Length: 352
Image (cartoon, rainbow, N blue to C red; front, side, top):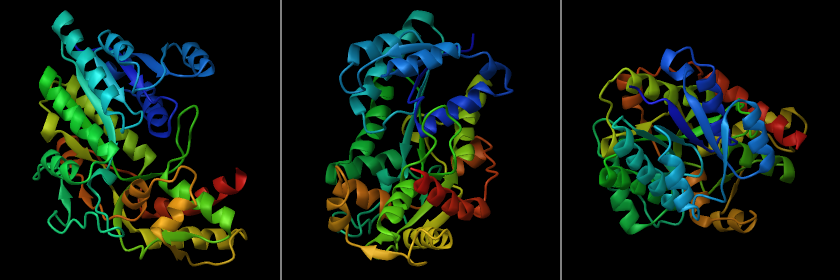
């Protein structure tokens, strides 16, 4: 019998909330019949999800509640982990719990993990890792992304990448299939009940509104992919559809799925925000200014030098071949939506 019980982490977040909304509204027979438990940390969130017919499970965080996580996972068939990708200990505990579920029921279990393409970005400003020996463009079907992440971890550990590696290794150790959705810059309005804003573009938009001008780090020459949140959420649904159909999807070290649908230069992104902010009368200039990596780190509360370089200045170009060819992913949002997103983010920043 197909798995029916889902443990969902990160339901209150931008990605998680949008994925959960899409799955709840799915027309796929097996997905429609899923029951959900959600890990939450606030009583008000627990009350909300309980009212929605879900089972809330209160916990502290993904670093400390190992036994709670294992027990919760052992009572579910599917885990959709959209909480922080940088919590390797939590991911391992959840996979270990799924293994117990598999032993108890004899039924399939699946672990779907959320990550991002900063894990494979270079570090062009600090020169810590210039990526000279890396593929100019990453391909999730023809290249071993896991092996590349292992090599990068040995040279320059990065918490999100550490989570990716731990997920794959735990899946292999406990014989649990793992599927990692490694998304690029995600944009657009989220559809979840709580957080409706992404990270990268909103961060830059808030800074722009606060300072009166937009910025890009260093030369702004790094290239990244992007995708709309609606298209991103669809990847998760497609993974479930294929698994319920009994298809042998690539998993583990071969199951790292990119999910990009467009590309941008960091400078062009910031120039787009500058143009939108200038048109709205909130910015003084319609072109973005450069800012040094150390300067923006010092100017950011709890600023992390490595995170800002990898997440806002690196080169990370990916080809979502597994998603398109294996899952049948057909994104519906295009460059017009990306461009329109600049105005949306400036307006959202102005309203805060």
